[in-house]
Amino acid sequence: MKNYRVAILGATGAVGQEFLNLIEERKFPFGELKLLASKRSAGTKIDFMGKTYTVEEATEDSFKDIDIALFAGGSASKTFAPAAVKAGAVVIDNSSTFRMDKDVPLVVPEVNPDAIKRHKGIIANPNCSTIIMVMALKPLYDLKKIKRVVVSTYQAVSGGGKEAMAELEEQVADISAGKEVTPKILPGASLPKHYQIAFNLIPQIDVFKDNLYTKEEMKMIDETKKIMEDDGMKITATTIRVPVYRSHAESVNVEFEGEVTVEEAKKAIASFKGAKVVDDPDEMLYPMPLFTSGKDDVEVGRIRKDESIEHGLNLWVCGDQIRKGAALNALQIAEYMIENNMI
Image 1: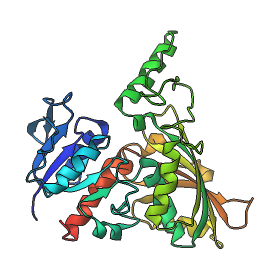
Image 2: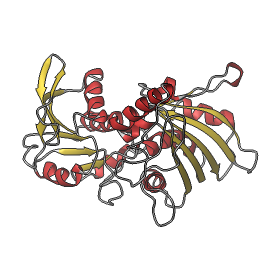
Image 3: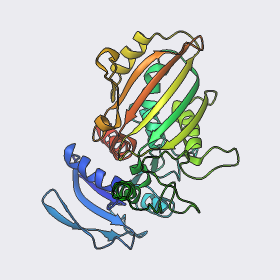
């Protein structure tokens, strides 16, 4: 098998570090590895698989002779993705920059792998909360077309980056010591106000749009329709930041065009690659962030009939948003391309 020349942009962040963990775990076939980041992080030393790498400052010339460029996300994608493609690399991008571009496939490999074939150099990784939800929706959609989805998310602070995780830890320590809390990061470092996340919930992720939905909520709505190739599906979302370090949870209500029983739903999800049913009320078994953190599978439980409508089910879904919601999904796209001689 060919060994590929790989670049990771954003190598020092949480997603970049997860890329490295997964490349080693999954024995991804790389021959050369280039680690890139902002000027601020350039020069950082990273030990990986017996070798010490020096993180380089990303420039438009960083992608010469690179086969696969894994972008961890952020505003740098807008500048560097076109440069990487021009240099001959395939870019798999975790940012929101290209997700809704009609010429850029938005891919979850278990859900819509055929979309990869339409790429023109850039493949977009969906929003983490979107990925986790569609991993539960796809096997159900294949049973019966979905009319409407109502989703409420409970999203871990790691979705806000390493700084948000540190803020939660500091706030818990300060409160336990009887000290005053001074929030600086959440709901967003660039926003004019900040709120305590320890022992609290914040019903804002990203900025508000004109329709009073947040940008995160609209990402879930728009991206799900694109991935499922169904603009007629009705979707509404409420996204909440919760004081959990890692792994997002979602309450998902699904209305179908016809009958789908609980038993049919469980069987379909259990047989879907990358999804796992954890659902035994008698034994108090259900998905939780505590047990999905660090895991590849998206877990689905609390599967029950919605007794308020004719053809509805309620689901509780948990998944590690740094793994399946970001780095793993992107690496799986690259693996699919290699397996199918697309790169």
